[in-house]
Image (cartoon, rainbow, N blue to C red; front, side, top):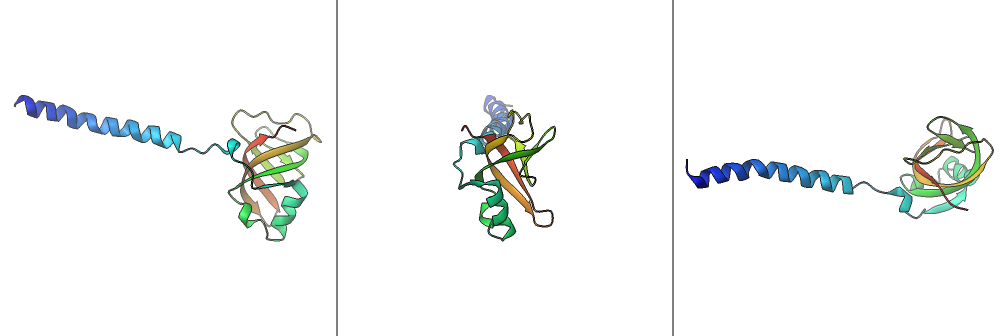
Length: 129
């Protein structure tokens, strides 16, 4: 085996490793940071629920919206606004500590169930008053 053939075998084995490193790097950069996106709507919890009940909320799905309302339920990994808006906090966000607290939040609207009339938001962050 000549020196050129040995060099080609080495290069040929390193190319997939380099490709894998580039793939991992670019897929990590594709993750969207929803906390920095400006909301397309700023409204109250009652109004956003009304929009979905009247079938006017389809354009809000998968977009960032800002909602103000009162906390009505707190679980270990989520909290609820206005009895029907389920909020999944962004990584590291502190969940409100008391029921009845008024919050202004921003998050991505991911689903609405017309049967239970529940709206679900993820990547929720608290907006400074």
